[in-house]
Length: 194
Image (tube, rainbow, N blue to C red; front, side, top):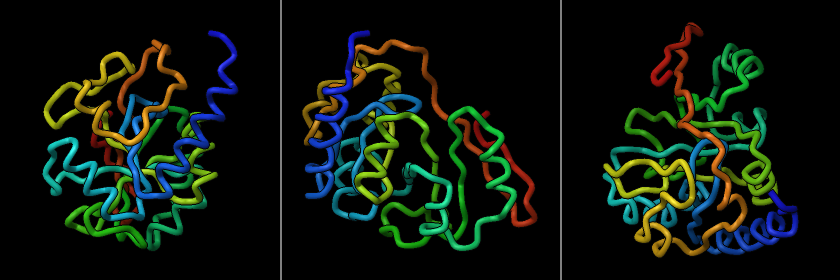
């Protein structure tokens, strides 16, 4: 793969402009291609539900760049969660109870929020520069297959976002959805998706 550094930086800047004005993006994540927006903006979140033709009862996840940021969006997470996150090298989404400072249309009916800490350089850089969490949901219409690679993303999705990231469009590395886990109030881990 040729040097993609200039493309990486141009895409980060373009995404920041779109996200800061409430737009939505199509971007590569640490798992599959996703649709994203500033997770603190209810109107942007609503646009993603509409584009995906997805019921609002099926909530989406947010991506953060650092473990310490979890404390801004979750009240009293169990300490075992942080121990677990240090041991896993696979992308893992954790469902946290008692979400904070996020729009109602992003939080599950039970008050929980699903969060993944990203290590993938593009996502991590974008989130750090935005200084807010990023919504991440598979780049497909609800019920259609999730796109592992850019060429699998439908034209409906590509045309429905405000910016399509060019970085990693030619990346065909194996990818898969994240593991999903939840911790009980006494710190026991429940695996929802292995």
